[in-house]
Length: 328
Image 1 (cartoon, rainbow, N blue to C red):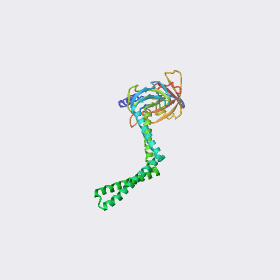
Image 2: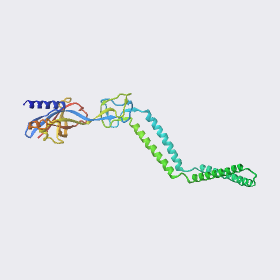
Image 3: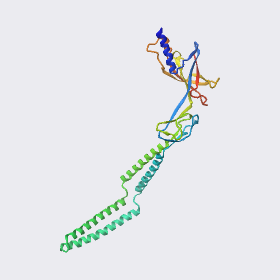
Image 4: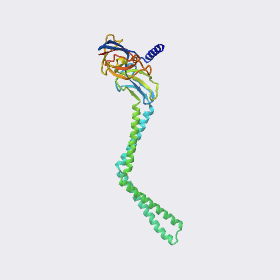
């Protein structure tokens, strides 16, 4: 008997620690009501910073109603602004080079290449004439070997310059090679991708509300430093409102999803808020021990969520609420 009393007391302590409020089942037979107490809850979303930075502007305060996409705060990141300028300058240069490659050689470039060829031909002609004349003199032993070697070297250099000038003219006339154009196109795409990443990071310095709601809390003030991943504020969607109650297994079979419920709060005496059963837990919140008697099984409780209409936002998170479920 002593052990049985201790077991019951332990269950009571566990229920209080878990915030469990047991319900009362009123009536019998086919008509009755389940009355249980709980607390108003709403859907909360934490607005976190993807980038680090100093909070330059805090655009919303606790209790403010905000719309989806509304700015809540802005971070100061001068390094990102400089990176954007650097990306734009590099991209502009790369596009200019690509445009020149695609447009091909200009008439002026062709004329310049042709002039180089003519000049090289003239130099080679003179060098070749010297080579013929000095060869005859060298054969008659009029000039020294060193003079002949110098003339031969000048002739060979002029010949090499003429070949290079002709090759350059051929390349200019044929235009830019396709593989060079493709390589520059790839470079432009790479710089564009880097620029998009930078712009995305800049956009992340502006923190916005992910949905319509009310600012429940803020964690930073203007001028403070926000690390990446830090929570700037918590926004509550007041339209997604519910009460979580705990019911014993003895009445669970009388409930069903969509079943209507009446919700009352102390802040609005006499007013009834309409609700419906949204979820019924498949698992008990606590178990006294492995072997249960028939009486002990009645102590098992299951979480039940009651969705409550709160279009006007009258119900606030944390309000105590009483729920009445009419069952057969």
